[in-house]
Each structure stands twice: as structure tokens, then as C-alpha cells.
Amino acid sequence: MSVLVAGIMPELGQVDSGGTELADGIAIDEALRDRLVAMTTDFNRLWSAPATPNRERKRMLAYVVEDAMLLKQSADGTTKIHIRFRGGQTTTLTTVNPKASWEKVKTPAELVELVDRLLDRHIYDDIAEILNARGLHPGGAAWPGRGGARFTPKRVQYLVHTYDLRPRLDRLRARGLLTKKELAARLGIHEATLTSWVKHGIIKAHAYNGHAWLYEEPATHPTKHCSRWDRLNGRAAAARASRMPEPTSSSEVERGVA
Image 1 (cartoon, rainbow, N blue to C red):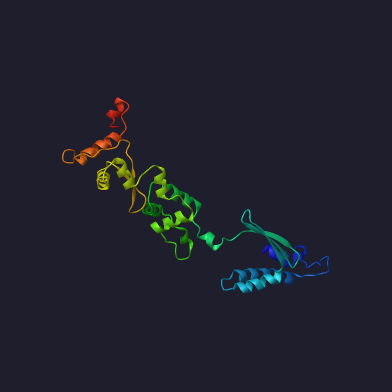
Image 2: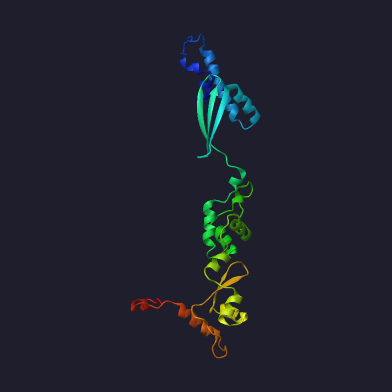
């Protein structure tokens, strides 16, 4: 409260213990000096008391502050407050601007970027599980009483639409993946056959939501065989083996790299 003391009576610093008369003709003795100092202590105690309502704090300020000028610094998110006390003392304070309600619950940019990366490999359900496993929370968790809010597929979908992230369907399409109808027509097979091939690992499918997939066209088109003579399990194993890289040296073969 030293600023307050100087603001109310800047001349106090010029009074000696003997109560010397000041240059402007004001005399002050030790008793009056003690009362003035006690006022600042009482002021601080009353100001900090939880029971003091804000309206009373405003009235208290009116007794000591002559005027105040606020200069908002939008560039760095602060406000400079120039204060002139009734005793003539001036001071300048710098405060951080309070956030608007929408800013308090805004999803952090780092979290949005993480969701954007996860969309390359995961659907909404999986992303929600990953975020919850990492202990992350949606922006709404900042509201009082909602600190335990968790991610759900709907919340992830909301983030994708709100921040205009590229949907997983578009990402898979950009990689050249096809619908079941498109790939079946390209391979010259029935869609039911394609479903069976996906089940046995001959064709690879990628989900873009909880109930729909796009399909990866194989480098070598498989042909339909009689399953009586050429079992799907055997064909699937052969297809997986053909996709594995060739060992480049005998040492790799010995280490089991195949």
C-alpha cells in the first residue's frame, strides 16, 4: 500500500519525527502521522476482506483516486492503466486483458492440429479414444462443473466441421481408394466376392466412418478361382507374402527379415 500512502499524502515522506512544519504550511505531529499510516492498513484489510462487496470497494477507490485512464494494447493483449491519486501521486499499472467467454472454451490450436494428423489413419471413434487415453479434454471442459468432459465421436466430428479440417473420406479418395462398386467393376467380380476377399486379406479396406469403407486397388489384380480347388486362405497367404519386401542379403534372411 506504499503507493496508496504516497497518493493520499505525498508530503508524509517530508515530515520528520518531531512534526516539522512542511513547506506549504501544513504541520503534522507523530499522532496524526500514526493515524494516517493506520488508515492505509485498515484500507488494505477492508479491501481484502471476502465479505466486502464490490460496490463498497468502488466507493473506497473514489476517496483516493482522482481519475484513471485506460489504454488498451490489442497487439500484446494488455491494458495500461494510468492512475492519478487525490494527493497528486501518479502511477501506471499493466494488466492482462481478460478473455471473452468464447475464448475460454476455444479448443487449443495444438489439439486441432493433432486431430488433423490423426484423421489420416483413424475414424472419429478411434480418435476420441486416443484423445481420452492421452488425458485431453474438449474446450467445453473449461466451463464450471464440466472439468471431466471427455471426447466422443460427435465432439471429434464437431471439431472437423468447425475448423474446416479435410474429412477422412476425401483423404482416402485423394490416395486413390475406390468404393466397393467401383473396385468390383474394375476387377470384374461381384461385390459379394470382393467382400469375401477383404475378409480373407486379399483386398485391403480402409474405414472412413464407423460403418463404411473404401478399398485399395491391388498392384496385381487377383482373379476369381474355384474355391473348391484353390482355397481363399491359401490365396490370402500367398497375397500377403507377395506384398512383403524381398531380403537384400543372406544376413537379413538369417535374422528373419523377410
